Length: 154
Image: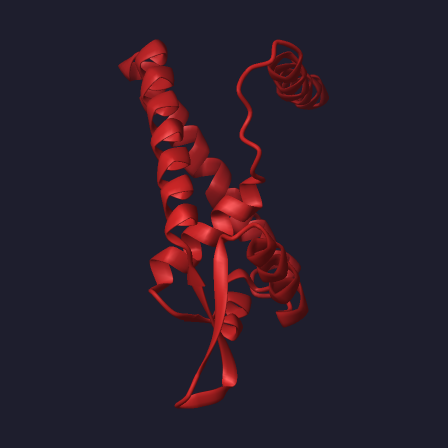
């Protein structure tokens, strides 16, 4: 297979999996992956987190963070707070309900990965990890090249 055949095959497999999961009624979370990522990051940052820290962590604009947090508030996942000692900053606290949801989704994902790794077997699982690490290193290097922080081949 040449490179384009491989790209087409991977793309086809991903889209086929998504279509099949939707068609068969496979349980799909009603929560977007980016929402879980943001909630998880806020939880790991601490009990009260500045909106500006969330913006810096994800390297997105404060307006984008504000929009996400607004949607999270509507769903009861977070609460905004202004401290008496720091009235210029807005802080966010994740609700217990959202913490439980994130924990359940992480547990589900962990169980799925355990089953997948068992299905692969030790050799294929180790090869899979090696390839993922190589891919992530490549894309990190490419990102640095785009930012002008790195030159040459990745």
